[in-house]
Length: 360
Image (tube, rainbow, N blue to C red; front, side, top):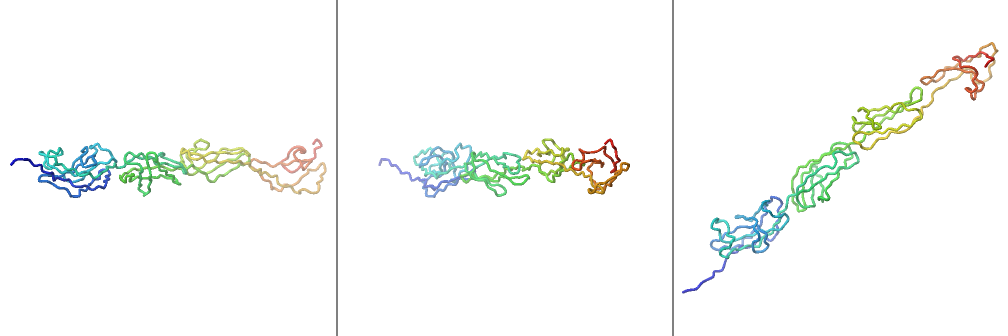
Protein backbone atom coordinates (compact mmCIF):
# COMPACT_ATOMS: atom_id res chain seq x y z
CA UNK A 1 0.00 0.00 0.00
CA UNK A 2 1.54 3.34 -0.97
CA UNK A 3 0.47 7.00 -0.84
CA UNK A 4 0.72 10.12 1.32
CA UNK A 5 -1.44 11.86 3.85
CA UNK A 6 -1.48 15.56 4.71
CA UNK A 7 -2.56 16.04 8.33
CA UNK A 8 -4.50 19.20 9.10
CA UNK A 9 -3.08 21.53 11.76
CA UNK A 10 -5.16 21.51 14.92
CA UNK A 11 -3.06 24.29 16.53
CA UNK A 12 -5.13 27.40 17.42
CA UNK A 13 -3.96 30.37 19.49
CA UNK A 14 -7.53 31.19 20.44
CA UNK A 15 -8.74 34.75 21.03
CA UNK A 16 -7.68 37.81 23.00
CA UNK A 17 -9.91 40.41 24.65
CA UNK A 18 -10.59 43.16 22.08
CA UNK A 19 -10.69 46.04 24.56
CA UNK A 20 -7.80 48.52 24.41
CA UNK A 21 -5.26 48.62 27.23
CA UNK A 22 -3.90 51.98 28.37
CA UNK A 23 -0.65 51.73 30.30
CA UNK A 24 0.86 54.76 32.07
CA UNK A 25 4.60 54.71 32.58
CA UNK A 26 5.74 51.46 34.20
CA UNK A 27 2.21 50.23 34.91
CA UNK A 28 2.03 46.68 33.52
CA UNK A 29 -0.04 46.29 30.36
CA UNK A 30 -2.08 43.16 31.14
CA UNK A 31 -3.86 41.57 28.20
CA UNK A 32 -6.56 38.89 28.56
CA UNK A 33 -6.29 35.53 26.82
CA UNK A 34 -9.77 33.93 26.74
CA UNK A 35 -8.36 30.43 27.16
CA UNK A 36 -9.94 29.00 24.03
CA UNK A 37 -6.64 27.97 22.42
CA UNK A 38 -5.93 24.43 21.08
CA UNK A 39 -2.65 22.54 21.16
CA UNK A 40 -1.41 19.59 19.17
CA UNK A 41 0.86 17.07 20.86
CA UNK A 42 3.93 19.27 21.34
CA UNK A 43 2.60 22.84 21.15
CA UNK A 44 3.39 25.55 23.63
CA UNK A 45 2.06 29.10 23.94
CA UNK A 46 3.88 32.41 24.39
CA UNK A 47 2.74 36.01 24.22
CA UNK A 48 4.15 38.57 21.84
CA UNK A 49 4.04 42.37 21.79
CA UNK A 50 4.14 43.51 18.17
CA UNK A 51 2.74 46.13 15.79
CA UNK A 52 0.52 43.95 13.59
CA UNK A 53 -3.22 44.35 13.90
CA UNK A 54 -4.33 41.01 12.43
CA UNK A 55 -3.72 37.29 12.92
CA UNK A 56 -0.12 37.59 11.84
CA UNK A 57 2.83 38.97 13.73
CA UNK A 58 4.08 42.40 12.80
CA UNK A 59 7.43 43.69 13.95
CA UNK A 60 8.14 41.86 17.17
CA UNK A 61 8.92 44.17 20.09
CA UNK A 62 9.02 41.80 23.08
CA UNK A 63 7.92 38.33 24.16
CA UNK A 64 6.66 36.85 27.43
CA UNK A 65 6.84 33.07 27.87
CA UNK A 66 4.37 32.91 30.76
CA UNK A 67 1.76 35.68 30.73
CA UNK A 68 0.30 38.37 28.45
CA UNK A 69 1.90 41.11 30.56
CA UNK A 70 4.36 43.74 29.34
CA UNK A 71 6.00 46.65 31.15
CA UNK A 72 7.22 49.50 29.00
CA UNK A 73 10.96 49.43 28.34
CA UNK A 74 12.57 52.51 26.77
CA UNK A 75 15.02 50.22 25.03
CA UNK A 76 12.19 48.91 22.87
CA UNK A 77 12.35 52.10 20.82
CA UNK A 78 8.58 52.33 20.42
CA UNK A 79 6.45 55.46 20.46
CA UNK A 80 4.20 56.66 23.25
CA UNK A 81 0.51 57.03 22.40
CA UNK A 82 0.77 54.66 19.42
CA UNK A 83 -1.28 51.45 19.20
CA UNK A 84 0.51 48.11 19.55
CA UNK A 85 -0.85 44.58 20.08
CA UNK A 86 -0.44 41.66 22.48
CA UNK A 87 -1.09 38.31 20.83
CA UNK A 88 -1.08 34.72 22.03
CA UNK A 89 1.14 32.61 19.77
CA UNK A 90 0.92 28.79 19.72
CA UNK A 91 3.39 26.49 17.95
CA UNK A 92 6.28 24.10 18.32
CA UNK A 93 9.07 24.98 20.74
CA UNK A 94 12.53 25.85 19.54
CA UNK A 95 15.26 23.24 19.84
CA UNK A 96 17.31 25.56 22.02
CA UNK A 97 14.54 26.69 24.40
CA UNK A 98 11.61 24.36 25.07
CA UNK A 99 9.61 27.27 26.56
CA UNK A 100 9.86 29.46 23.45
CA UNK A 101 7.73 29.02 20.37
CA UNK A 102 9.70 28.64 17.14
CA UNK A 103 8.41 31.74 15.38
CA UNK A 104 10.03 30.62 12.12
CA UNK A 105 7.05 28.20 11.76
CA UNK A 106 8.96 25.14 10.49
CA UNK A 107 5.89 22.89 10.21
CA UNK A 108 3.50 25.56 8.98
CA UNK A 109 1.17 25.23 11.97
CA UNK A 110 2.07 28.40 13.86
CA UNK A 111 -1.11 30.17 15.10
CA UNK A 112 -1.32 33.86 16.07
CA UNK A 113 -4.33 35.29 17.88
CA UNK A 114 -5.62 38.65 16.78
CA UNK A 115 -3.86 40.98 19.20
CA UNK A 116 -5.42 42.97 22.04
CA UNK A 117 -4.53 46.62 21.41
CA UNK A 118 -2.33 48.44 23.90
CA UNK A 119 -1.14 52.05 24.10
CA UNK A 120 1.82 52.93 26.28
CA UNK A 121 1.53 56.43 27.71
CA UNK A 122 4.32 58.59 29.04
CA UNK A 123 4.08 59.73 32.66
CA UNK A 124 3.68 63.51 32.83
CA UNK A 125 6.43 65.65 34.30
CA UNK A 126 7.29 69.33 34.55
CA UNK A 127 9.54 72.01 35.91
CA UNK A 128 8.21 75.20 37.50
CA UNK A 129 9.47 78.62 38.58
CA UNK A 130 8.02 81.90 39.81
CA UNK A 131 8.29 84.72 37.29
CA UNK A 132 9.01 87.12 40.17
CA UNK A 133 10.72 86.47 43.48
CA UNK A 134 9.07 89.54 45.00
CA UNK A 135 5.99 91.61 44.24
CA UNK A 136 4.24 94.62 45.74
CA UNK A 137 0.83 94.35 47.37
CA UNK A 138 -1.75 94.45 44.58
CA UNK A 139 0.59 92.95 41.96
CA UNK A 140 0.57 89.38 40.66
CA UNK A 141 3.27 86.72 40.67
CA UNK A 142 2.87 83.93 38.13
CA UNK A 143 3.88 80.32 38.48
CA UNK A 144 5.38 79.34 35.14
CA UNK A 145 5.32 75.66 34.13
CA UNK A 146 7.33 73.81 31.51
CA UNK A 147 5.86 70.40 30.76
CA UNK A 148 8.53 67.91 29.74
CA UNK A 149 6.45 64.73 29.38
CA UNK A 150 2.86 63.61 29.02
CA UNK A 151 0.01 64.97 26.93
CA UNK A 152 -1.40 68.48 27.16
CA UNK A 153 -4.40 69.17 29.29
CA UNK A 154 -2.45 68.95 32.53
CA UNK A 155 -3.92 69.29 36.01
CA UNK A 156 -1.65 70.23 38.90
CA UNK A 157 -2.39 69.58 42.55
CA UNK A 158 -0.75 71.56 45.33
CA UNK A 159 -0.08 70.66 48.95
CA UNK A 160 -2.88 72.99 50.10
CA UNK A 161 -5.35 71.13 47.81
CA UNK A 162 -5.37 74.00 45.33
CA UNK A 163 -5.50 72.89 41.69
CA UNK A 164 -4.59 74.42 38.34
CA UNK A 165 -6.14 72.81 35.26
CA UNK A 166 -6.22 72.80 31.46
CA UNK A 167 -2.53 73.63 31.27
CA UNK A 168 -0.15 73.25 28.36
CA UNK A 169 3.14 74.69 27.20
CA UNK A 170 1.21 77.55 25.64
CA UNK A 171 -1.16 77.99 28.58
CA UNK A 172 1.48 77.51 31.23
CA UNK A 173 0.99 80.12 33.96
CA UNK A 174 -1.00 80.27 37.16
CA UNK A 175 -1.40 83.60 38.99
CA UNK A 176 -0.99 84.30 42.69
CA UNK A 177 -1.83 87.72 44.12
CA UNK A 178 -2.08 87.69 47.93
CA UNK A 179 -3.52 90.85 49.47
CA UNK A 180 -1.15 91.09 52.44
CA UNK A 181 2.60 91.23 52.91
CA UNK A 182 4.55 88.10 53.74
CA UNK A 183 6.33 85.12 52.22
CA UNK A 184 4.08 82.71 50.35
CA UNK A 185 5.02 79.10 49.59
CA UNK A 186 3.36 76.54 47.35
CA UNK A 187 4.36 72.95 46.62
CA UNK A 188 3.22 71.05 43.53
CA UNK A 189 2.58 67.46 44.63
CA UNK A 190 0.99 65.85 41.58
CA UNK A 191 0.64 66.29 37.84
CA UNK A 192 -2.10 64.56 35.81
CA UNK A 193 -2.26 64.72 32.02
CA UNK A 194 -5.16 64.38 29.59
CA UNK A 195 -4.52 60.60 29.34
CA UNK A 196 -5.26 60.33 33.05
CA UNK A 197 -1.66 59.41 33.83
CA UNK A 198 -0.50 60.70 37.21
CA UNK A 199 2.98 61.45 38.54
CA UNK A 200 3.76 62.43 42.10
CA UNK A 201 6.15 65.38 42.22
CA UNK A 202 7.64 67.66 44.84
CA UNK A 203 8.23 71.12 43.41
CA UNK A 204 8.36 73.96 45.96
CA UNK A 205 7.69 77.53 44.86
CA UNK A 206 7.83 80.70 46.93
CA UNK A 207 7.77 84.46 46.59
CA UNK A 208 7.58 87.50 48.83
CA UNK A 209 4.91 90.20 48.96
CA UNK A 210 6.09 93.62 50.14
CA UNK A 211 4.40 96.97 50.59
CA UNK A 212 5.43 100.58 50.09
CA UNK A 213 6.29 102.66 53.15
CA UNK A 214 3.56 104.91 54.51
CA UNK A 215 3.30 107.73 57.02
CA UNK A 216 1.31 108.62 60.08
CA UNK A 217 1.19 111.59 62.44
CA UNK A 218 2.14 114.38 60.04
CA UNK A 219 2.94 117.40 62.21
CA UNK A 220 3.80 120.95 61.17
CA UNK A 221 5.73 123.09 63.66
CA UNK A 222 6.41 126.79 63.19
CA UNK A 223 9.56 128.28 64.68
CA UNK A 224 9.23 130.68 67.63
CA UNK A 225 9.28 133.73 65.41
CA UNK A 226 6.85 132.23 62.87
CA UNK A 227 9.07 132.80 59.87
CA UNK A 228 9.57 129.14 58.97
CA UNK A 229 8.24 125.69 59.81
CA UNK A 230 9.25 122.04 59.79
CA UNK A 231 7.27 118.96 58.73
CA UNK A 232 7.56 115.79 60.83
CA UNK A 233 6.00 112.37 60.39
CA UNK A 234 6.42 108.74 61.41
CA UNK A 235 7.13 106.03 58.79
CA UNK A 236 5.94 102.43 58.82
CA UNK A 237 5.77 99.41 56.52
CA UNK A 238 8.16 98.83 53.63
CA UNK A 239 11.89 98.26 54.09
CA UNK A 240 13.09 100.38 57.01
CA UNK A 241 16.85 100.44 56.23
CA UNK A 242 16.21 101.82 52.75
CA UNK A 243 13.66 104.53 53.55
CA UNK A 244 14.37 107.52 51.33
CA UNK A 245 12.84 111.00 51.23
CA UNK A 246 13.05 112.63 47.82
CA UNK A 247 15.46 109.79 46.88
CA UNK A 248 17.83 110.55 49.77
CA UNK A 249 18.33 107.85 52.40
CA UNK A 250 17.36 108.91 55.91
CA UNK A 251 19.53 106.41 57.77
CA UNK A 252 17.05 103.70 58.69
CA UNK A 253 14.97 105.68 61.17
CA UNK A 254 11.20 105.47 61.45
CA UNK A 255 10.62 109.20 61.89
CA UNK A 256 11.54 112.22 59.82
CA UNK A 257 11.72 115.97 60.39
CA UNK A 258 12.40 118.29 57.49
CA UNK A 259 14.77 121.21 57.35
CA UNK A 260 13.10 124.62 58.02
CA UNK A 261 10.81 125.76 55.22
CA UNK A 262 9.93 129.44 54.76
CA UNK A 263 6.47 130.31 56.00
CA UNK A 264 4.03 130.48 53.09
CA UNK A 265 6.13 128.10 50.97
CA UNK A 266 4.73 124.70 49.90
CA UNK A 267 6.30 121.40 50.92
CA UNK A 268 6.43 118.24 48.83
CA UNK A 269 8.06 114.99 49.93
CA UNK A 270 8.17 111.61 48.19
CA UNK A 271 8.76 108.53 50.33
CA UNK A 272 9.99 105.23 48.91
CA UNK A 273 12.36 102.34 49.61
CA UNK A 274 14.40 99.74 47.75
CA UNK A 275 11.27 97.71 46.95
CA UNK A 276 10.19 100.44 44.53
CA UNK A 277 6.51 99.94 45.17
CA UNK A 278 4.15 102.90 44.91
CA UNK A 279 5.63 106.15 46.23
CA UNK A 280 3.94 107.84 49.17
CA UNK A 281 3.52 111.60 48.71
CA UNK A 282 3.35 114.12 51.55
CA UNK A 283 2.48 117.58 50.24
CA UNK A 284 0.90 120.83 51.37
CA UNK A 285 1.79 124.34 52.50
CA UNK A 286 1.86 126.35 55.73
CA UNK A 287 1.73 130.03 56.58
CA UNK A 288 2.72 130.47 60.19
CA UNK A 289 0.29 132.77 62.05
CA UNK A 290 1.50 136.08 63.52
CA UNK A 291 0.92 135.91 67.30
CA UNK A 292 2.43 139.25 68.32
CA UNK A 293 0.06 141.56 70.29
CA UNK A 294 0.99 144.93 71.76
CA UNK A 295 -1.65 144.72 74.46
CA UNK A 296 -3.66 147.71 75.87
CA UNK A 297 -3.04 151.00 77.65
CA UNK A 298 -4.79 152.55 80.58
CA UNK A 299 -6.64 154.72 80.25
CA UNK A 300 -7.77 153.35 76.97
CA UNK A 301 -9.44 155.13 74.05
CA UNK A 302 -11.69 157.88 75.28
CA UNK A 303 -11.38 161.59 76.15
CA UNK A 304 -8.17 163.19 74.97
CA UNK A 305 -5.60 163.58 77.72
CA UNK A 306 -4.12 167.03 78.17
CA UNK A 307 -0.70 167.79 79.66
CA UNK A 308 1.28 170.95 80.27
CA UNK A 309 4.36 171.35 78.12
CA UNK A 310 6.54 170.88 81.13
CA UNK A 311 4.81 167.66 82.14
CA UNK A 312 5.54 164.11 80.98
CA UNK A 313 2.60 162.59 79.15
CA UNK A 314 2.24 159.22 80.80
CA UNK A 315 -0.14 156.30 80.53
CA UNK A 316 -0.02 152.79 81.97
CA UNK A 317 0.43 149.56 80.03
CA UNK A 318 -1.81 146.73 81.20
CA UNK A 319 0.85 144.03 80.69
CA UNK A 320 -1.31 142.03 78.33
CA UNK A 321 1.13 141.95 75.42
CA UNK A 322 1.82 138.70 73.48
CA UNK A 323 5.35 138.04 72.21
CA UNK A 324 6.75 135.61 69.67
CA UNK A 325 10.28 134.35 70.13
CA UNK A 326 12.18 137.60 69.50
CA UNK A 327 9.61 140.33 70.19
CA UNK A 328 10.23 143.41 72.39
CA UNK A 329 7.71 146.00 73.62
CA UNK A 330 8.12 149.66 72.72
CA UNK A 331 5.91 152.74 72.85
CA UNK A 332 5.50 155.58 70.40
CA UNK A 333 3.77 158.90 70.04
CA UNK A 334 1.64 159.23 66.90
CA UNK A 335 -0.73 161.72 65.41
CA UNK A 336 -2.91 159.22 63.55
CA UNK A 337 -4.44 156.17 65.16
CA UNK A 338 -5.50 154.77 61.81
CA UNK A 339 -1.92 154.63 60.59
CA UNK A 340 0.19 155.11 63.68
CA UNK A 341 3.55 154.04 62.28
CA UNK A 342 3.38 156.41 59.29
CA UNK A 343 2.51 159.32 61.55
CA UNK A 344 4.94 158.44 64.33
CA UNK A 345 6.28 161.45 66.27
CA UNK A 346 9.84 161.23 67.52
CA UNK A 347 11.58 158.08 68.64
CA UNK A 348 10.29 154.91 70.18
CA UNK A 349 10.39 154.68 73.93
CA UNK A 350 10.80 151.76 76.30
CA UNK A 351 8.21 153.31 78.61
CA UNK A 352 4.75 154.78 77.97
CA UNK A 353 5.79 158.36 78.75
CA UNK A 354 6.79 161.27 76.51
CA UNK A 355 7.92 164.90 77.09
CA UNK A 356 7.11 167.77 74.79
CA UNK A 357 9.73 168.40 72.09
CA UNK A 358 9.01 171.32 69.86
CA UNK A 359 11.41 169.91 67.24
CA UNK A 360 9.21 166.91 66.62
